[in-house]
Length: 282
Image 1 (cartoon, rainbow, N blue to C red):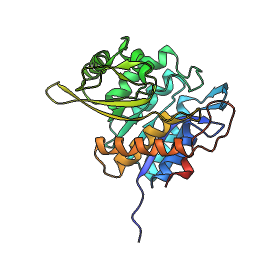
Image 2: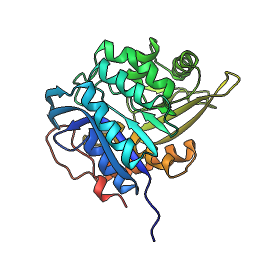
Image 3: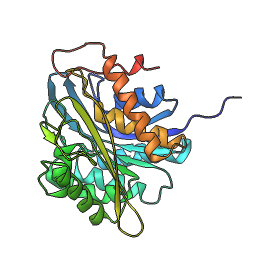
Image 4: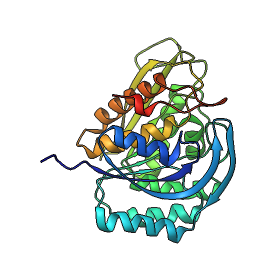
């Protein structure tokens, strides 16, 4: 008899074009051997060229979806993406307050196309979710908003991540480097390293004594416009791998490679930021 797959609850918005959001979560979780469940926070009309409409669901209905999944199927890990409103963010945090499983929070604020997906009131609730999360996965503009600090080099990246960890009292932040342009100093190097052709993601963790550590992963940048849903895919992959028993660093490493393979196997759909090829990853 086959062992049961880990149960992953994805809380996020729906992407009508299938490249990001809940659709990317389901594909990722399934391809990595997990069982995908969903609590949809909003329905969007979007494609590779942008978001043309958003309908946010009620907080009560989002909570009802979570309760239905958690109360019957059960859950081994949670991925949080687009939330849609401050009220939804609060009800999600309330439902997850005492949940004893990994939680990966992707603090979605802006779509790949540039459309805003979170107002200031919603972002203010993010701190509660970060306190509950095993890992928070901001890109650099999101980390600037969360920390209130400008980030132009590795030192400022460390300071901003450390400030957020200090404020929430622990946890872990994976600062995604896809938005880096120009040079910055990598740990152990004395000269700027170009990030135009390099993706560097850095994990910051805080121990019980209040000190924080960092670990970086780097790979050549994949030159493609078919990168819609990279953040959704990475966070849901990490959640699935954590539920399978991997350590945080191992889960991040494997999830990054899953994203890279999906980028390399993109089907080429759309005139803008096209979807990745989740189904082609083996």
